Image (cartoon, rainbow, N blue to C red; front, side):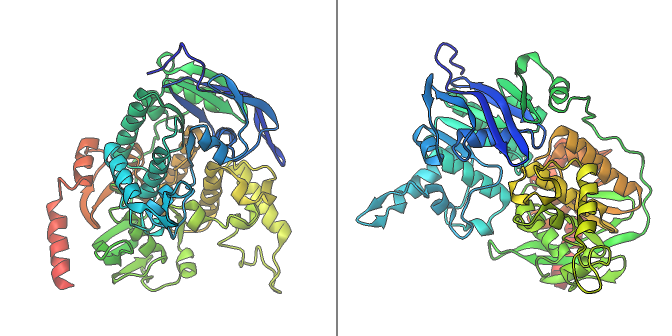
Length: 524
């Protein structure tokens, strides 16, 4: 409940933050009321995460003032922010991969007695918090072994564990399933009712309309305005954000399929997180001229399926053919001659973060004659020219252009760089895993058009998405995964989101897949 009769919980007044070659925040003012859910909306690179990083003490503003409860405060680092009751769930998680979930949650606020960590009480509290807010986690699982969605839950629990009063959520739903998003929205509403004040960064207009009280819109580092959610619409917000009308629903013509490009037979992939196989005797085809979407709740084998297809993980059994060539034991480079891959984890598998942007753009092609001389030297001018072309074509925003260190770019622009590289590369099969994750509505519109253009040009597209709207809107065929098996083959034109949800939850199965899986298990 908003408490309007008291001072603002947080005021950021005329905040200016500069980086080399870019003015990230240009005299931005943001005022958060007590008990309010305040959304921050803007294009990729508009300055949203930078502004919140200033509030959390990760960056220092060159100009401007921050006030908490009406009093000016100095926030030099995250420790100062935590001392003031400010917590943040980051877009790119701040987790120690080799630590357990519990260790990450208590890191920095550990209870110690006689020089020994007191984990039992901490474990009890973490479990209580996870049950209270519907954020189920395994406290003893290592971060490197759990899904991206589980890592997100860990970040949220880490903030709740510290009893923060000002909660910053930076793209918190980007990696969550539709069911988890509904739960998180309810969690945020409950937290606001308890008197906590929430700053919510999101590109998803429907979520902002559902959960926020007010929204502040940024565009290219400037504040465009703050409006009440009850007084605006999705169309008006998208216009404020990108400065033009945006087509929110993708349009596509009927597709004509051709030869089978990807043939997967009896594919099984082991799980690192538990003893059971993550992918169990899966068989399917993807033809040229179609977009096949793998739908399912996160953690049902989609990640391992992609790892098996792209060569990141070996198969326990089964075979893979691309364009009638056996790729079961092929190297990643051999597969890359036929497929492009937009990975789920852009920072772990998509980019070398400390390389300049231009090197990441040619990461899968640098050895080709276009970019490397016969003597083995890189053609720097050619690399920069090619990089400049893609940066312009895909509107990748970076402070120093091709020379920008990729780590310094916003998450959305890192994603655009991967999309540019993978879509421009020669391929017959495009595997796109959460391709619009963290992108604004203008970029999503563009990417959906590009996926459809790939399909219309005769390529095969395998889309893995947790976004029901994207699944229903973009795909020509939907394969549903549940507990490592394909349980349904659906036509998006004749099915409903409710029916799709039943398959995703395991409440419904296609009989032909039940029979197929049973026969393959017997054969195995």
